[in-house]
Image (cartoon, rainbow, N blue to C red; front, side, top):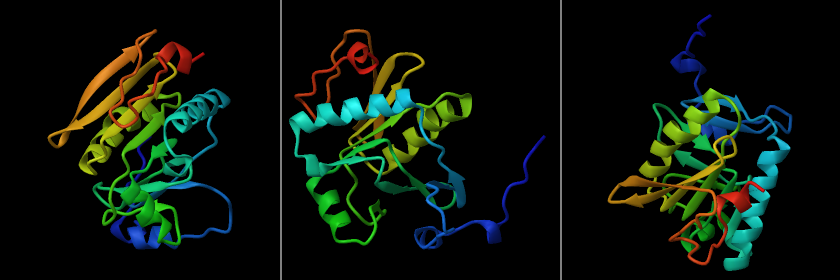
Length: 193
């Protein structure tokens, strides 16, 4: 069964999204003008994201880290905002967000240094993280985008080079080499343990 696409009048602008309040605690991403409910993550995905958060905190100021609470405006066919599992600010992106009333990095603000997405089960989620977010985060000029995939037990580190991402896949005991967090010392086997 096909689902009808929303009409122009049904799509939200980014400004409308920023002011949206349905009276619940439901988290949404805005994808091409449409609110997409973000269901709770699996406990495995939460554990992976926390493990990465604690490892990053060993090597950089904790104030530069955001855990599932900062959204990024990205370019889509229509207004789009993503909420990564983990984000590492630059000093400039942190300062810009600190001056706003909402933890949202808009397109007129400097991008963060690194975003991490832990892939949720399902083909739609895989396509979103590997295809759409890959393009969206590259367009924002985010230095590193990590795709952490519990199903394949691999980490794809997407490094922004000359306007596009160059992908390096890490698996097993191969230590992940980050330019944003050079002292990072975990390998995928440890991340997925």
